[in-house]
Image 1 (cartoon, helix red, strand yellow):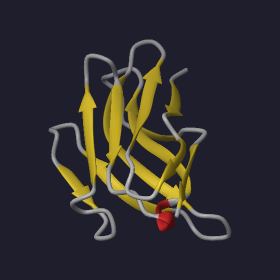
Image 2 (cartoon, one colour):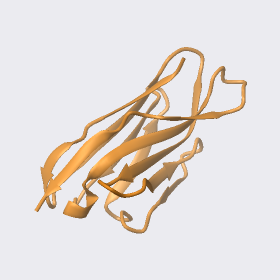
Image 3 (cartoon, rainbow, N blue to C red):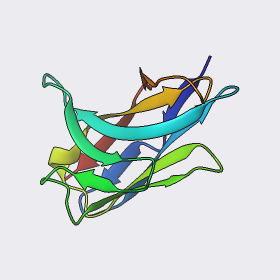
Length: 121
């Protein structure tokens, strides 16, 4: 069974930075497309950034120029570097990953447990 674990959240002042981690662990798997979502209190989950297996990326307009998604395939880890944070970025951040387990199989999608980001004004 493959697990996704997010980390790196916390409390930061407006204008500050945080780096989120989404680490996949288990046996005999391949991590394909990975998305980062945020869910603010009382609101629906929103797509923030996407990184595909070829390294191509997409971002929500609200984070373009401030957030960077990247991946280290040797560590099965995806990162979300968040700069120039705003109070409105406060939310629980989730990674959502397409995983092939075993690597030759079709992908299935998995959510992590989330990590809280709070930006104070």
